[in-house]
Length: 168
Image 1 (cartoon, rainbow, N blue to C red):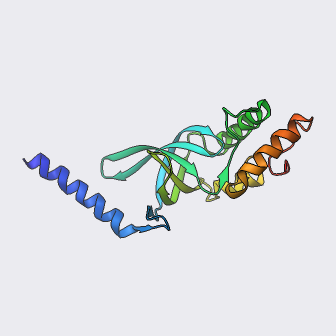
Image 2: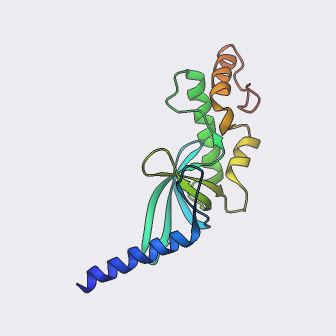
Image 3: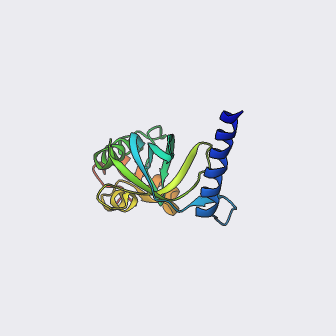
């Protein structure tokens, strides 16, 4: 019985902490301001990482994080050139964060279960989305569909080596 009360207290405590930090976005999804320190355990592609984050005393979560504000080419894209660009983008993100500690802020639910969207700050205090955009390894999120199609067509026509930010 005591063990059950301890667990219930933990759940209530975490819920209260989330409630006091959280706010809802325009779609009613909860947001947590953060900051939350996390260790990068895996880089999936140029805009998604897996992290281990401590959320409470003795409570560590493994969570998938989509980096807010950017869209990177997909490793399983339709076009061979997009898949090539995706590997470049993933490798650039690996060089920025693999195995390091990052800070998650403005955390909100993603459209896929188990994944969150967050602004991610590297160990030097720099925003990851800005770095990936500056390096030409991702597109701004709002422009993703048109740029993806144009980049594939342009690079397939012989424009290999063109960074993503220029391939429009």
